[in-house]
Amino acid sequence: MPNPPARTDAAGTLVERRYHLVALAIVVVAFAVAALVGTRVAYYAAALVSFSVWMAWFVQTVVDWLRHAEH
Image (cartoon, rainbow, N blue to C red):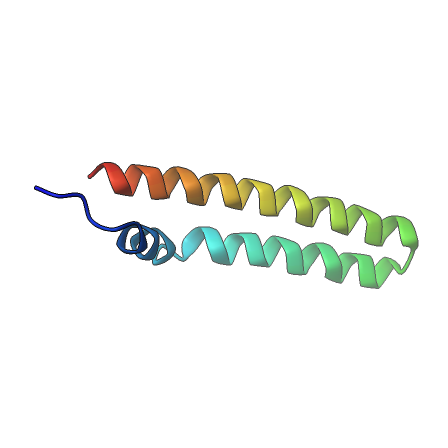
């Protein structure tokens, strides 16, 4: 049986919205807190949080994509 195309695997992975919504919520909250505090350090911390969340989201999405491709 041939393997499905990579686009089908990616689409199957991106349908799982839980990770996407949690990552987006964390980033929004981080920048909302930074806006409330209003200092450069707070915005820097929000940027660090956003970068960390993006990296975790990216790794989790790729792992799910590879897992989906195996099946």
